[in-house]
Image (tube, rainbow, N blue to C red):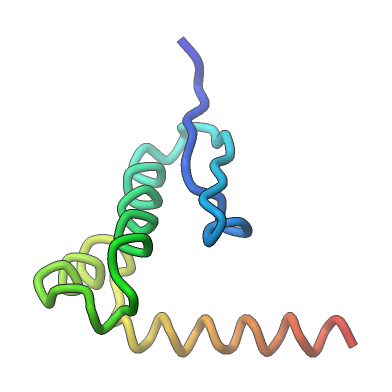
Length: 84
């Protein structure tokens, strides 16, 4: 039995790549696969049914989608400014 599991790659998410991850955090692969499934099935966050959005906020992000989006923007701004 191995201690690795395949899950969507954070840096190649849009392309559907999977990486091997240590299965130390057992919920990560399931959550990552769910996020990828939603990404492929809906054209936007707004298109995701409200019930699914609530599950994401409560069970995956443990924060509002608006807050996660704000944090994502901050991360990309920091990455952009550090590459200059």
